[in-house]
Image (cartoon, rainbow, N blue to C red):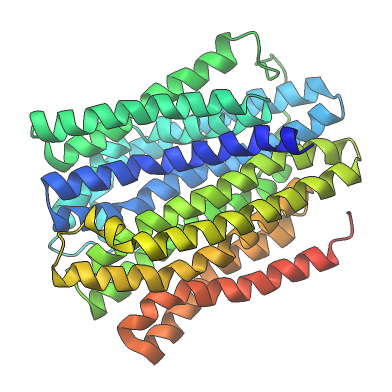
Length: 430
């Protein structure tokens, strides 16, 4: 069972990390070619990216859970109907979001709290990226479904193909062609287009897929189930964007643009670690759902234990890496031996304690979704992603001023861990 688990989870983690590397690579090139102010604008724009990703998660996690349960129960016709309905629906939703985002990019940038220094950069980045938001949303949905289809290795191939495209185009557009921050957004958007084409080919033309498009009356009633199951992971995905927006406002008040630059570096590392935990959760969910559909309680319990051990080890390892290599990480974004360079190192080391806790909260939320316990997962996700983190930010900055910013996420996740442990203790199905 361990071999089967690793077969699903490791590619899932790699896929999520590589997805996150798109913005990380953009940040490094933007910092190199455009400077600190442009780098801060990427952080301001990042909630838009997490929001469009979360739309893909909302549909993908719920539908993949339902389809995995049907597959485990050998109800293939229902599985195909859900797949067809979900693909059609999310394509229409994604197209609408792309059009509205392009038209309203100026208002989106203003809403995200861009100050005068970063407004032009952030608005340009969002406007260009909005042209490709359709491919962001649908390719992310396909990536999750590909893992549920039993091809986790193929999912990482598609992600690597996109990441490689981005890595080639970033220096080409920003360096050789001198396209500025718009070039960074264009490179990222085109890489998502490449990934979308790879995944679309698998589901539409490959004969290996277990999910097929069928002609049928769409089972619209399934959306009450799909959306309720997808909502907790959607909140987990969108929560960094909400957190960044609120933090940007508070940091702008206490620290100004230099603080935004520091927070940008922290968020790159935070999102990278979060993607490891989310990848572990999303890799575990299809297995738990499949064996839950087969009423194999022993397998469900075993896979959950594997997940908890994995995120524990990953959290400790990533915490130690950040503590030891904080100067090296900071130097990739901020000129060395400057005041903000040293301030960022201190902030990063204070902030990294959250890595020891966050994986257990994310895994528990995903586990509840896989067992069709969306209410518990929703409470946990919204507590971690919105309620506790905002309350902790307010309390910590009131008590400790600017230093409270960097410890507020750790304080928030401590309370969320209590909820997660209570949910596991009261879980009756396993």
